[in-house]
Image (cartoon, rainbow, N blue to C red; front, side, top):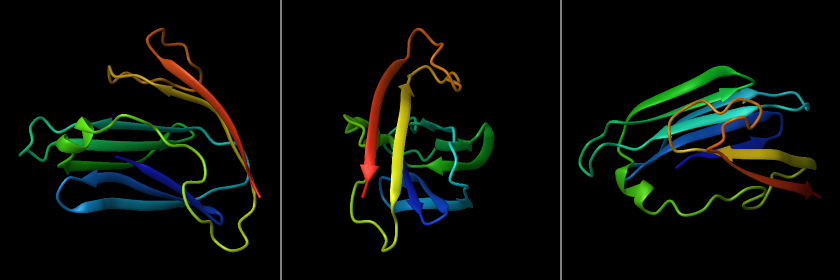
Length: 131
């Protein structure tokens, strides 16, 4: 449903995937090599034939992008896992450490924020070294 890719000094957001049209709503933002707080909110379309889903991304608490009129109803039916870390090959010259301190998820649409304070939230921890 959503992809975040780090290429060089850019975060590239491939925010939402359409059931019928592939990925769209791509945006990129320059990033420093410091810690960042990323949050996304993905809403499912109401029906299999509507295009009223939506996706929003924030970086360090600032809204980066909103994608609306998304046909993503069927994609949610298959949403059974989350993949983190290096998912495929990396660009030549890319090295460093990818650290994920916390992944928090909920299904009530409320903001999670920087700390897991929501009692209905699941948290996962993982650290990955890119060599």
